[in-house]
Length: 409
Image 1 (cartoon, rainbow, N blue to C red):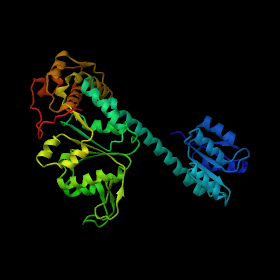
Image 2: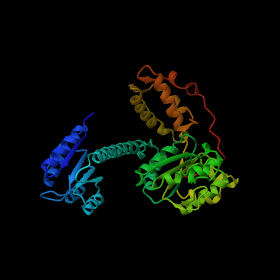
Image 3: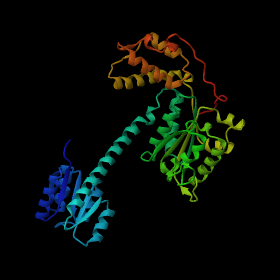
Image 4: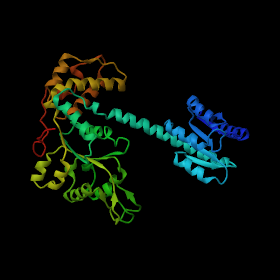
């Protein structure tokens, strides 16, 4: 692993030498600068991982160096070295973004800890930025694959919603139609993209725990509440909370949810303090919520609050013209994953896929292609590698929900 580079900026030769000796002893590569202009030049040449910066320099102050770095958008952690008692300048440096300050005479144990912590913080920020970039690519609106009018309209609607002020969004569609993907795309196309995204499956959480999971609880709120715990609304502050299978939430919890959506505030279980948050809530259901309202299984006021901007994802059998584009996408993906070179499907296999009704929708298609590519020993997927229900031309029954889901995108 390459050594991390630290730029030491100080006009005193003895200080530069002593810092260089210590930093190299701790395993770092060191470059040196004796004034501000040289420091700014070395930053461009060496791209250091960290800078130790003296406040008093012959040509410009450390504060001016920091200001120039910020103007150039140079995001490198800086530890300011200052004379004993000059706290005001150190505070100004911290306001300009310096990571820490160390007073002279230098306490090298404190400096070592500060250097280590600053570099670890930089590494974590870099990793998080890389992770966010991968997620933005993985969940971008372009990953909503298809050429049909329906899919084009979904992509356009996602872009509009993502950059709107909409705080609640409802996604409806059968299981496997891509509700999770659309929820992610809305988040990562929005200004909230660098804030948290959390998904909860309401059907997977016991009724007696739902309130605590969403809103948190105070210590002693119930028998097992040994410590205070933040809920998902609090953790997702500034970001997006995705509540899947919202129709499985009981009516009592629905009443509490509507109050939070209306006021963007809540109390932890056992708490007396209102907690205010800024959270975009995306909910999804594979059931017809209008029918659930009519049968008194879902609150009407909650439905109207959620359905301000509804998105309906049609089952794959209603836009089969997208199957070809989906196949190309999945084959490329699994070629990379499995290190294969599958060129496509045989004509017979392609025809079977087009005839099949896909009750499991896009998820079922993806799983079928994954299976076929694991088994295939040639550069084409033939019928024998497809699941039996497809290869034998069977038509499975269409999933039955609580009423047909109607509506436009």
